[in-house]
Length: 204
Image (cartoon, rainbow, N blue to C red; front, side, top):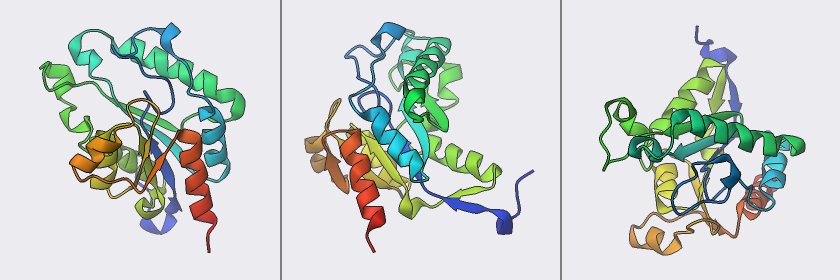
């Protein structure tokens, strides 16, 4: 049963891409546990964000599932391992979403979540709905989408979030320019992105 509107608490959130933003990406997709490596200072960054009250929400395209090169079970194992790596700094994510479909690889099960694939906003909308069911309203004006690709920036902007591009992973600044999907800030990595956010939040 959804809480009454008067009982809702307003929160801020960081919507985070996974590969190339939190953990190092792989050219052929991350399909095994031994490929999972945190990007330097990512755990410190997420710890600082959580201490400041942000909810942390992963929003990741995992089209390798539709391609048949990785299973949903393995993606879940990879996410669990990533969470265990973040845990020592108190930086675990509060919610994790991933889109299994791929436009070049039709699959009935995966295509049921076609609107989840970035740059579409299905995962963000699902997260907003899920948090609302817990009595939490995400303030989009004080929430951010952080990722290393143009589609991350576009997804964030479409969803009404403030978008930040990181240079780790693909760091597609030129593509953002080409498609006129301009991030609010371009950061060298997740740590610099979070530092920017926290500095902005502290301004009068």
